[in-house]
Amino acid sequence: HLEEKVNIKSNDEFKEVAEAFNMMITKLEEVDNQRKDFVANVSHELRTPLTSIKILSESLINQDTFDKDIYKEFLIDIDSEVDRLNNIITDLLTLVNLDKEKLILDNKVTYINYLLEKIVSRMEPIAKQKNIELKLILNEKIQIKIDEGRMQQAIINIIDNAIKYTQPEGIIEVELYKKEKHAIIKILDNGVGIPEDKLPYIFERFYRVDKARSRNTGGTGLGLSIAWEIITSHGGTIDVDSQVGVGSIFYIKLPLEK
Ligand code: ADP
Image 1 (cartoon, protein in one colour):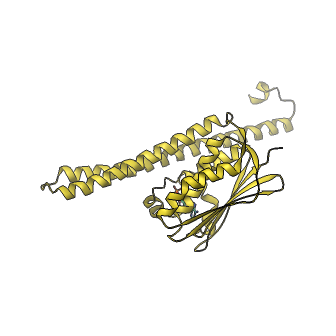
Image 2 (cartoon, helix red, strand yellow):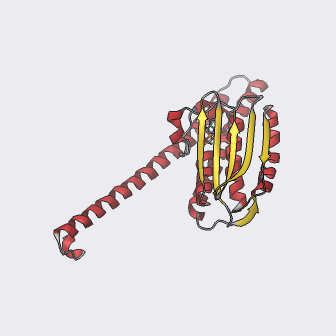
Image 3 (tube, rainbow, N blue to C red):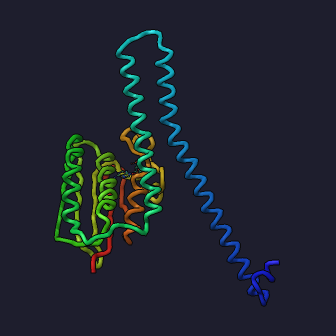
């Protein structure tokens, strides 16, 4: 009885409404499937460290010996799995809040130069631990309107990846410049690189090119999706160029303050 309900006058109109209706249902199904996938991914990600903790604690319970070194070794492993759970939950909460708070960013006109100086000096000790050189190249002073706390997190996530996926003695460059009506923050590393066929997926939640490597470096697979949410909610974009064995370049493009 669709014709009567929406007061349809012709066959063509009926076809149009039916098509629109079908498209809406398809979209709803898509959203529902994405939500289901997300819940399944979250459950899997949380279950992995939990299973490890369970195995480790059961082995400790079933130990016949009271060897202090064995206990310590197992407890250190349990401790790092707890850290991992904590990281996943922190990142998930950040994502949930970003979804909710999209429209209430605390935007202020900010000199991005100073923000980058602050971030780089904060990340330098982490890079140094791996003997990686972290360079900052500032060409000119640039003002943009951003939520400083959020943008800081996005940039940190990308520099943190550059450090994680670059071998010791590597080089990372963070550069700021203007291009047309945008400020560009370029983050270059000479690390492991990303295969071309994997590039379209790296901003997806929980996607990792190499699960084992990401796990060993404490990655949750959420860092880039958090960065993507923050940057796009500022009207910006994030792009990447990468070559396996050569390195990666991430470009954050943000609209300039008028
Ligand atoms: P993770 O917590 O695993 O680092 P991200 O969402 O931050 O998750 O990144 C997704 C994946 O993209 C990573 O697992 C890694 O495979 C790849 N990746 C991100 N940044 C880099 C980089 N600078 N060099 C090489 N691979 C990277």
